[in-house]
Amino acid sequence: MNRAIVVVDGNNLHEGLWACFRIRRLDLEKFCSRIVQWRTLQAIYYADSNYIQYPQTNRYREQQDYFAYLRGVQNVMFREGYYRMRRGVPQEKLVDVYLAVDLVDLCHQNAFDTVYVISGDADLTPAVNVVKGRGKRVINVYLEERFTRAGVQIERKSLLKPNCHAFLRITQAVAKKFEWVPTPSHRFGVAKK
Image (cartoon, rainbow, N blue to C red; front, side, top):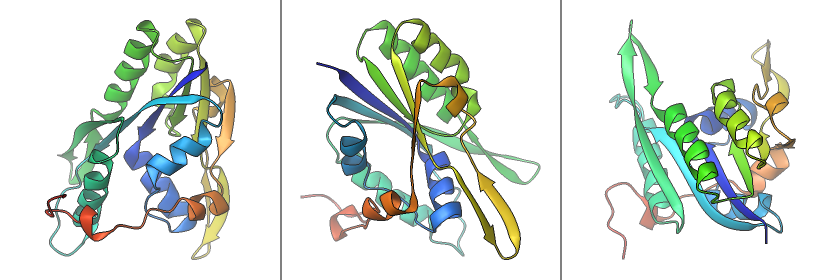
């Protein structure tokens, strides 16, 4: 049996999906079950930060709806970072640290054989190198797209890819297939039955 875990940088994935495909979120449970293929999915480690609440946008509410869905998925370990304002710009804090610690800790516990890292962030490279050094397989899952929007050439690619054993690309067709659509039970502030 080959045991798999999936670690997800939630904001990194969300921003990439929106920039490339105008899709906000994935049905993480179905998507992760699909990418691990024949391996046994042990758990999903998801890290993200609450958006700063701005009265003119619904981003916070949409995000909280998604978080409500994730908290209801069996085997999802939710790690919550935060935003700090620096010179008027919000900066996400703790997310990469949570993911790196989970990767190294679970590796030392021998909790998996293969890890899927859903992020394009090179900050996870030291943790990935530790995991690889312990004989574990690391597969990077992310977007690699070039497109033009409003006359501007945009390139989205994984900076983590060169440090992993393999790479799975999230295409527009895959993102569309696993696009998350909220149900009334996922609405922020609605109690689950």
